[in-house]
Image 1 (spheres, rainbow over the protein chains, first blue to last red):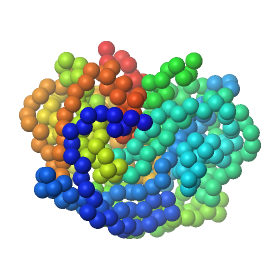
Image 2 (cartoon, rainbow over the protein chains, first blue to last red; image 1 turned 30 degrees about the vertical axis):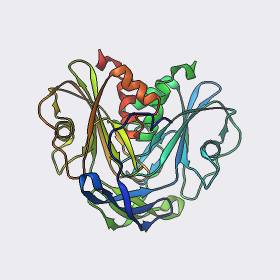
Image 3 (cartoon, rainbow over the protein chains, first blue to last red; image 1 turned 90 degrees about the vertical axis):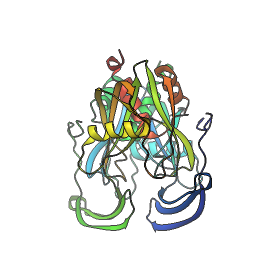
Image 4 (cartoon, rainbow over the protein chains, first blue to last red; image 1 turned 60 degrees about the vertical axis):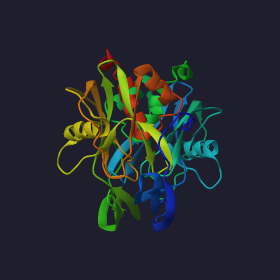
Length: 190
Length: 190
């Protein structure tokens, strides 16, 4: 990721104080008092702090994209997405991606490529999401889901997968961001 | 958006109780106790509730994409993004997009196209982001920024904009999602 590979002219705010206002099992809410002395500015900013996430465009040996259907509590809707989840402790993003793919779908791959990395939401989230492409996936075991996870599996050819994104059926922003990186690296699909 | 235009088989959880745990100026933290009786499941889920957001791929008459550089408190970094923001009250997404483009950049357009709509983060955010393409933008006035907003403007040809995304210089997930919808609708750039 080259997020700093640009000649920015903006000034950096300094954190004066940071407090954890609320802790949940998957993120904590921070209140940051920050200051930009050069502009005589100070303010309180509220940040959702979470570990980095990963997601995976997983494609089987016969060129089917593996999709997960599940109820999402944020929007109170059932969604169709690519597999993904949070990095667990210090396992690192690739290990997390392999683990989540296996747990959510039962598939494994020996052909992993990093598609890119995005800030999950630079304004209010502290973390990044690591985007992977897993090619030549093979079914290895049964699903092994977390508590409260109920996931139905689907698979579609790549063209149909892209149509589902274009039509808004697949609409999670970070999933759609992974698709942008796939489209910007067409050589990976050859 | 056709987010429900798919034959889902998953069951919907029901909200048993919902409490606002914390209120900030731009979102509130909800605790939802939800239940799935068919599976004998119940749990507490934490949701960030915010108004819908908009962002805009704005292209000038001479085919330059207008980009905004600013400090982002979530990741404590300066970023390069497309213009965007939150819908204000009941103004609606297109009005919000026109307002934010004008405020952040001073540009206006009479040629707006809806690129798509994404869930900002279906798992933990309640809201959606409306993605627009504004073509033939013309400079109309000076920037008119909110308190704490300091925005530097840049503009690049479309090819260079896409390279900045591919290389990870532009990395906000919802900005990258807008790029996916642009790439999936190439006829809009002709």
